[in-house]
Each structure stands twice: as structure tokens, then as C-alpha cells.
Length: 73
Image (tube, rainbow, N blue to C red; front, side, top):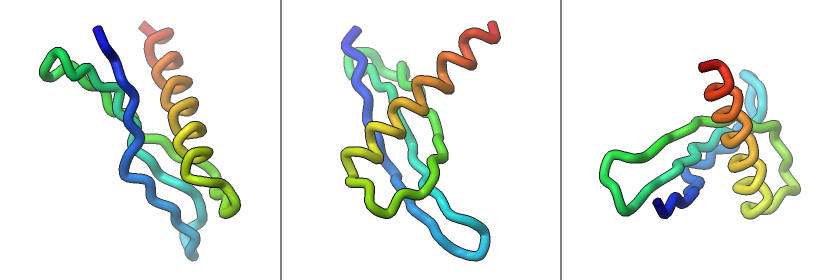
């Protein structure tokens, strides 16, 4: 299985409702159809972070959320 991680739909917000970054992290298996897992993550806003840093933080948070979910079974 060739699983790849794809970070997309990165949205930063800073308004009266709060501030942060929302991102969608997809764990995709391009060899098998319908074998994808999508994890939505929320990160604290860091206006000085590069896109690569945001992607890395989003990936780590998604992995953490998946581990937490799987450990509950």
C-alpha cells in the first residue's frame, strides 16, 4: 500500500470569532479506490509560519488525532 499524505484546504482566520488555522489532511491510497481517510484539524494561528511549517503541523496533528481515535477501539 502506497499511502501518501496530502494537506489541503488551508484557511487562516483572525476575526471577532477568534483566530486559528483550519486544514484538511488526507491520507490517500492511490492504488486502491475509496481507501482514503480525511482528517480536519485546527491549529493556533502563527502569522510568521511558512506554508511548509503549517503543513507539517497539520500533518502531525492529524496523525495524533488518528492515533487517539484508533486507541479508543
